[in-house]
Image (tube, rainbow, N blue to C red; front, side):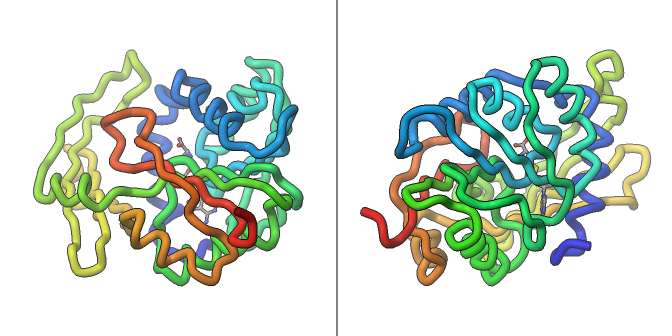
Length: 249
Ligand SMILES: C[S@@+](CC[C@H](N)C(=O)[O-])C[C@H]1O[C@@H](n2cnc3c(N)ncnc32)[C@H](O)[C@@H]1O
């Protein structure tokens, strides 16, 4: 059971809705792998730890780029990774579990967390950042973390979205979505339900941080904010934060 109670149910159910279509290695996954290469501080094949890998597309793409990848995932979304790895002839290591307690090893040149940082409280994020700095990163390593942008989410407050089922394309469920943004806690609340079952709603709650807020959050974690970059997909509500050990210039 993870520290935050909605996590397993939300990502398991949405994985059931979308996994049939989205469990594949995409162009974005190859671009994520290229970002790892671009920001690493040493040449050659890298040791990479990916947190919250979902179906495993980015982990497989990173392994295809020649790196040694360990990927951590809590939910059954991880069940897709073995097939993807076999299809692409690579062998990432999967650690199925909660990244707050898992022991995926140490000495990684890069730690990545694509599209997921911000679950739980500031204390939870600090705990994870501290693990990245103290338990996982090699000296000179880099952490690449997608951080949700409060301005993008706030702009969508109150908006709704409807998605038709497209079973032929791997989307079996007809879905509705409601965006809300809690300004007080700077948290995006992203609520989904099957159109036919409007009372059974599930929400993910994502703490959003401006780069200035992120820099404050990092204080005392052992990491510092080195740079930010726009998301790979302009429709993503996030930016990429490049974090490095605080004692390294
Ligand atoms: C929004 S999804 C993104 C998945 C993947 N990184 C991608 O970009 O496609 C966030 C993922 O993080 C996983 N996750 C959330 N909290 C976790 C935890 N404490 N330990 C391990 N995985 C976790 C979820 O199960 C989910 O698969």
